[in-house]
Amino acid sequence: MYQDKLSVLFVLQKAKLNKKGLCPIKCRLTYMKKRRAFSTGLFINPDFWNSKKQKAFPPTEQNELLNSQLSLISQKINKAFFMLQVQDEEFDVADILYAYQGKNVKKNKTFLETMALHNSRMKKLVGKSYAPRYFEKWLGTETLLKDFISFTYKKSDVLLSSLTMKFLEDLDYFLKSEKGHKQITVNKCIQRVRKVISLAISEGYLQRDPFISYKPKRYKKEVLFLTQQELKLLEEKVFVQERLQQVRDMFVFCCYTGLAYAEMSSLTRKNVEIGFDCVEWIKMKRKKTSSQLAIPLLPKAKSILELYSDLPSGKLLPVISNQKFNSYLKEIAGVCGIEKRMTHHLARKTFATTVLLYNDVPMEIVSELLGHSNMSITQAHYGKVVQKSISEQMKSLAEKLKVKEG
Image 1 (cartoon, rainbow, N blue to C red):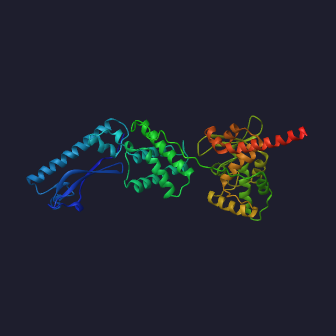
Image 2: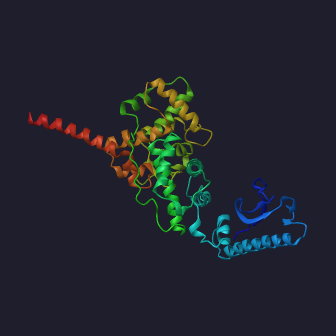
Image 3: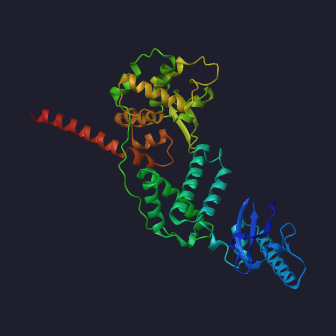
């Protein structure tokens, strides 16, 4: 199963020369491009060491004894390596060292090793179960956690068995004080940490969740979207520059379909089908979650597609990078006098709120049209919007009742 060879190398720590002129001998293990080193407890005069042959010379009684001890260490390491191979289970260089030391392999796993295992598995599923951008976020989180452990604990890694609730408290403080992250970003990072812990438990590295009593800190998240007036203003605005006109059209299209940038940019004729109701539907997979999307084409969205029906690229809409798209949206907001920070994602939020929820479309249908993996995600994002809609309707009802009473 494992084709990679194990490298066992003895190296001298010449910087740690003692009063007798002897320096420690360290053993360095390299496997699958990862290293682990440990002290052998043996010492030698640097002048008596042949690095190429990995032996002490000349062949004196003392040097021969040292060579025998080093040979025995190599044999024990290779025996531990062989035993791990026979078990036919995943292992890494740390496991080889633990096995050599006679420690329980699973119980001595570290946090970053487990996270690396999680990400290596995820990498194999990119394009199948995960979008490339989602995988990149996990890699970014891994780098962030390396920085955190190094900065906070002055270590390269921490044992899973040493984790307590303080780890998350320290992480929360580090992300806010050193990285300037907001609570929503901190919560997302901690959510990923807990997913790594779940993997550690399922693999038998941990017996229990050290963060089981953790409760995420609350944060106020305001859902930004275009109001009916702002959306109408945007739709009716005529732009002199073609690039702004095109970006406006694509943005409005997404305000009536809820498509994210990845889906909008890859939309082709094969994604539009006639449904059971004789209406055209957009049908495609959402790249972020791999969930199936089925969105009926509203008249406004359909009229925009008709404007670009003769594109030579085969796409239904003009092709533009996400960076440029958002840059042009900033210009459009300035021209239209819209003070909100306009990005492509604002169109998706506008679809969910102004187009759907404010027109009394039930939350479960909104969740389905947005391609959310479960209803709780939709509720978390748009629950307050529904409350506002209910409040407005109740005020309207109260006014009607007053008229009747009068």
